[in-house]
Image 1: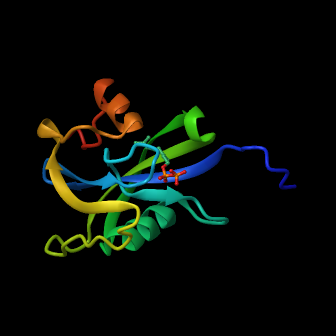
Image 2: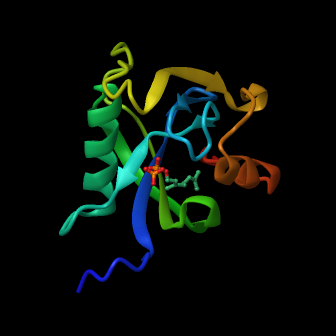
Image 3: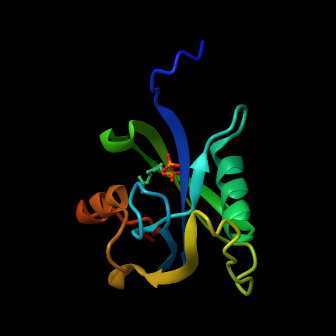
Length: 142
Ligand code: GPP
């Protein structure tokens, strides 16, 4: 089956919400180096989107999450590194609001912090920047 040709993969990324803030970290991989991005990663075989969201956030930040909900899906093609992701965007909150994020994958991220949605840091990772520019909000409307 594997012939070396690039194929689309499925990623799950999480808007971890705290009041009006979201959890972001600076990427250290060459694709979007030093831009601010959301926690997340590849969907594994047999996983639900919610399971993947919880696993990836736990692996990257040590945080346990709750109220995990599907938001939307985007199609992200990165010609520069021949990667293509169908990205499932979820939202969630910390199960324990007092738990602090840890940088558990320091080769991938320079550290996690909360940023107010109306005062986001720059530069954002391209696909996230595009969503923000398009008026997307991960917060519940009510
Ligand atoms: C892959 O980054 C990028 C995405 C899944 C884009 C999704 C972001 C949005 C806000 C829509 P990665 O670091 O997980 O993959 P790679 O290791 O291939 O760089």
